[in-house]
Image 1 (cartoon, one colour):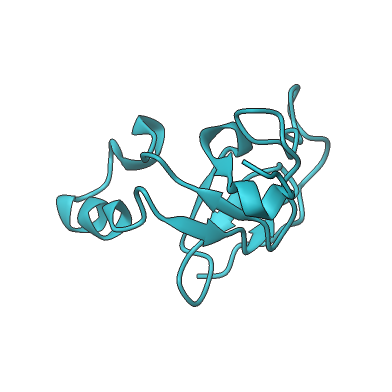
Image 2: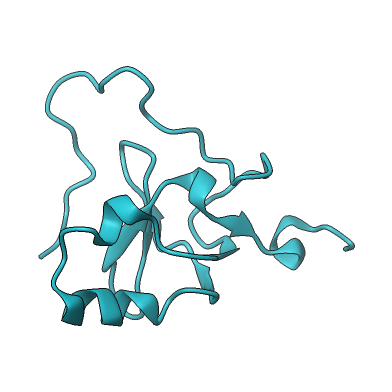
Length: 100
């Protein structure tokens, strides 16, 4: 099911989220980031079969498919399957142009 980037009315306080990773590096659609672990808020109410599918992404470097109107980063293999907050990922050093 595709999700719209449009919002209904004004965003809540604190949104949109800043498009920066845990270390303050900027993130855009297409930026490669590492997902160290899935946050509890994402998986706590999901069936175990869905949690197992999402856990395949832990520790992997993935491109951000899109950033929605609230500032969430969307990931997946072919299409957007799940989202994370920008501060829950780390930009890959080569994606940020860092030497280290």
